[in-house]
Amino acid sequence: MNAYPVYEKRTVRDLSGIWDFFFIPKEMMKLDSFTPDGLQYDDFQIVPGCFDAAPKYASQRGTGVYRTFFNLSKSGKCLLRIGGVSLYAKFFVDGVEIGSNPLPYSGFECEFEATEGRHELVVAVSNAFDYKACPLFSSYYDFYAFGGILRSIEIHELPTNYLGRCHVTTLDIEKGRVDLKMEITSDEPQAKVNISFDNKSCETYIVDIKDGISNIVLDVPDFKLWSPESPSMHSVTIDMPTDKITESFGIRKVEVVGNKILINGNEFIARGYNRHESHPEAGSAVPECVMMEDIQILKDLNCNFVRGSHYPQSQMFLDMCDRAGIVVWEETIAWNDDADHLADPAFEKAQLEQLKLMIHNSYNHPSIIMWGFMNETSSEKTESYPLIEKLVKTSKTLDSSRPVTFASARCDNDICFGLVDIISTNVYPGWYGCNHDDERQYEKVKPRLAEVQAIAAKYNKPWIISEIGAAAIYGCRDRMNGPWSEEFQTKLISEVCDFVNESDYKPGLALWQFTDIRTYSSSGHLNRARGFNNKGSLDEYRRPKAACSLVREKFKKT
Ligand code: ADA
Image (cartoon, rainbow, N blue to C red; front, side):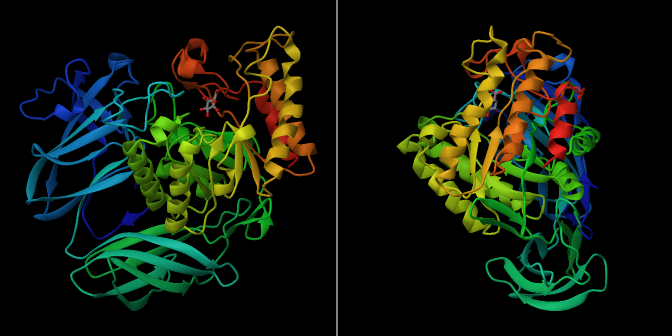
């Protein structure tokens, strides 16, 4: 089984496995001119996977063309369902284009008609930087743009009347009352549905369908609340004569009250990391066993929080966060995009589309308590304000149950903090703009955080230090605490943790970052030793640096 939801009546083909493959260098072709006609596949790849994470195509940019075959038991409407691609892709069934996706890391679906029997599926996915084809990933972003099919890929045979998702919204944590918003495609104005929670006895309801949506409010029997400390999960099964879906969800309430974040009325103080989906041997297609390892390491470090930096997350990873009680900030992709991008209609369209897909795909995860977008954009400029305002309004329209935020690197003169529910700031005192010949740069941490706290306090909103840290090369030990040493990184993080633990107001904290990740040697004009962002508390192979033992202790005190 891939991540939730589970469709139990329709025929679903999981297409994970070995696919035919052919690589076209970017110099030979742009994706927009690709057709699969007459291609001779001379290789193979594993799906999910990144074709450029393995030796043969490492560092190459262009279009990876994947091909497989699938059988349909009947003619009719089908659904291609993919967990995410990088960077952008086109899809062909029997040589005919059925869809395209310009949104890196977004889970998405496209419907198509096909007859009973055997069919060819071609996924042409490009990792070439092309702002027109893919405005949401620029070559200066400080994380490596791998190419491939990152997560699960399925073909669903759709019945005449079928279910989309069922979004579960907590209405009352005292009664276990939830609102079920069911997506139903039907040629009838009503539907007869059997609804059961946790595979217990079901009840039959006749629901009205308006614009493809049916709502019903129900109390969950024998409910238990979801919280970071006690992450109880429930399931709901919607069973129609022709289709059946089971969704996983949690009953919990998230509120912002003054400068506090509350979960079920209890203050939540984030202690955790920014985590990229990245592994030196798998690229962005992080295997589920490594996701499990990351979850266990985060818990071992006494973390209760992870920011999915900087893009929509794997649904399987979010399923794991639900069950581990690790609270999540999920966000749309961006990295220091300037006002020229935000003023571009194509960039705006892509941002809004990715936000809608992210909320649609991730809605039922109780671990996600806030939506974010556009990391470190130019939120100090008036030209940026309209898109940030649109993203906030869109988020609230699609999901009034969660607060919104964005990580600002312009906190001293940010003009958009008034739009969001939570003030989030990325600051690097003691690392950037320092004279590292003087190893006491870490002494700059507390004064700077006090300055930022004063800015955040003006808004009387929760404040999260959404990024802070320093680089250390794994194994670099230096009694002089020199830069790039594990000692320096540990000392700087110690200053950060002491500030948040000693401060009267306890801000949230997401250290930058969980593990080292591949980037480029001169990302965003920043030097990156060995082509990696080395600010992980663990290296890219999840080997702990000295900072881990400090974090484990300091986070225990929260
Ligand atoms: C920024 C950015 C991160 C990373 C970090 C760094 O805050 O959001 O993605 O690039 O800086 O390591 O400098």
